[in-house]
Image (cartoon, rainbow, N blue to C red; front, side, top):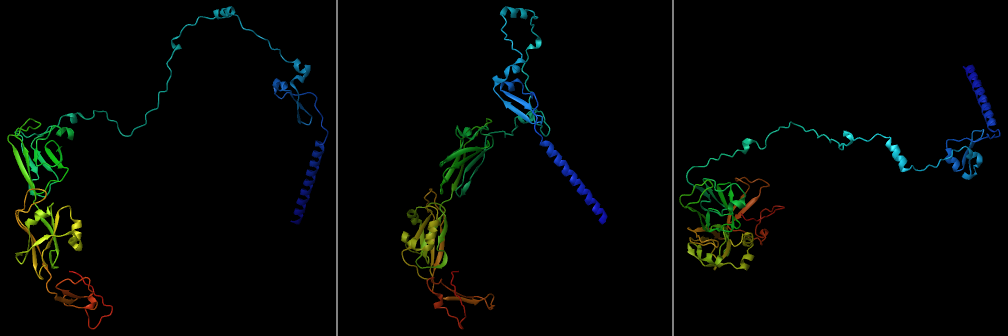
Length: 427
């Protein structure tokens, strides 16, 4: 193994020595003096290079030398080989005509003139599905609709509302035959409507279809009012039939109705402010004549409550603030009620409204009771007679407790209970 390694090392050293000798010979050859080659060569730059005074010459070493000199200094030898340019002149007209005369006459060809060849255009984008060629709308749809029109004279089938009820949102009248052509709402009522509504508040008439006429008020219908609906005899339908005799219908809105009273039930204080709320507007001074207040079956004097009295009663003040418009009245008795008294407030038959002339036909009454003697009514612990640790104790009195009074002052437990909490409430 050592012998092979020594032989390879000797061979490598010999190659390195030979390479160094080759490099030295090359360097010596390149250092020889330059020899200039006689003559000049044109590298394809042509006469333009010579005009600018640029001449390219070569040396034996292969290096290119560019000599620049003035264009006029090239000497006689440079200009001797150039071709002289002949100065030409234009032909006379007579000679041109002779030349043209030798040519054959021009004859028009059918394809000398052609339309401008325009691009055909892009193909339409492909469409999904199948294209069906036909008439739209179909012929069957164009045929007039056959309407089953009842034969005979025109009739009023129904109207709404009917009878007595709350304030209606609208009035409708339905006929047995078409009354107008199918067109715009404005056109159907431009010539008037066949229905008379008395009294008629502000509002608009419009047809729903061709048989039903609606009246929609812009202001609510008045309460406590009788309304009549009339259609005159001879009124014709769109098909030519006429109403044989006058049609008359009626409906009415309710008279005043007592909706709410406070106080009610009891017990309550002996000098309450009585709040009455109605289903429509009222005139308190006019209504006062139709109200009655009784205690034990006997009438007592009362008056309309003053603003300061209403403001002093927190509950009545809240009712007044929540009431709608002039639909309420507040009363107070002239004298304080006795304890344990039953007070009855009556809206008598014949009471009038501030909206319409209709009056009530029967009495309406509500009642409340005043406080009696302050007594213990009930006491208990838990439910169903079972009292367990953690259950609450309840003590019920005949009258509500004064909310300003501390119940700790008069309720005592024996033996005392740690962390005891007493709460009073109105049940």
